Image (cartoon, rainbow, N blue to C red; front, side, top):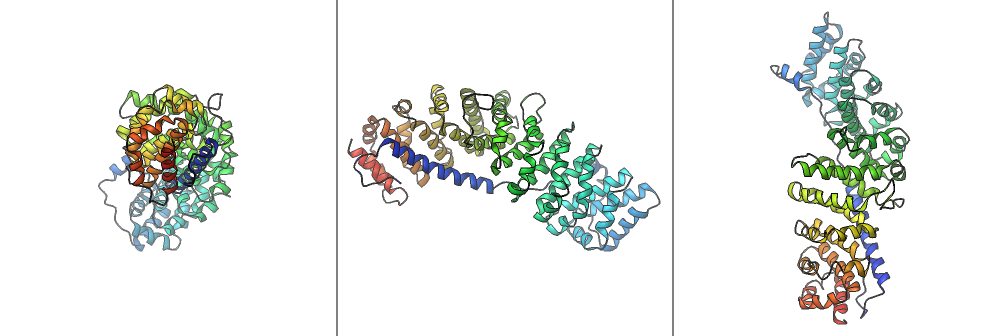
Length: 493
């Protein structure tokens, strides 16, 4: 905190370092909060054509007798079509939670279904897998965990030849992975990481998208940093994930979204981000950012907001690595092009998806925090005013905009010359009127830096009744020291 007892500003280096420390602490807390909010979900894969064909059949809740009858027919029916119809009826019944509960408590039911999964008849095998998929999607953990005897077979079938069957197995495994640590403890020694790695060179986009889903569920597990991610990083997966994120005509949006989230979870674990940078992670993501900016300029409905969030997060978090030196080289970022692309995306978010503005600004914060060259790019392209225009969007956006401006200001007098005179001071006066403590606190930090490097700004501040504005916050415990320091600075100029 700043001391209010001194009648003059402390040495520049001390104040700037204090500001940096405070921001680092706040950013670390925000990163932790983001990791804790990662989305875990289940997905249900149903064949639209199949559903349409079966549209005349009303799926009903099945009792024990009906389940037993369908299983018996599926096992011992005299005709293949009869056996297949029995499994179709069972699958439709398993769409109901009540049927699922009855099924798992019925002795021998899972064993019979797993036996049908290993059938040499492809259609029976497929319907048995669809039944397991319905069970895996259950919100009741006991239902999904009952599928554990099938996991080794599901993994084995990932090396099969039918892309539809592999896709179904991947989504089923993804749903089971979400369910519990017990499921994952069984899958790991069974070789789930090598099995998933073997799928990543598939030519089928549906398989790749399903693989991205299953892998993302695995990477979100609480034990992932210790038990899972080291194995993933030791496999061929990282290089191929980055390959699938490379911009160009072969980039598929659905596949890219899944694997961008996979990359995000790996980076958040901080197990070995230097390896990702070595494999070109930073440059690949930077090029993808440029590609997204070009895409939103070509069309208003690019659908890229789904990809933007994980890509922005990946870049932001990679930039916090000590090994990264932005500003050139094969594994680094080009200053001006990245900043220009980011502002194109910020304008797009402002119009179409305001909730993504904090993600873009977080990246801009990390770009400018330790890089004079990115700050120079911001100034040389006259992007301060467009940045200031984002202040009214929300308190979260305001804090991030002000933090970026602090990054620029703390680079010294030459940078502050571009901040004042200009529209910054009037905007700060408006921010000081906010009821949000964090917005006001960040505004005070920026004013402190401005006064350090542009003493002339103090007079302008006083002329705009700055002292009266500060008085409104002098009783707030979190702001008192900074308010008093600024008051004394203003009065002693």
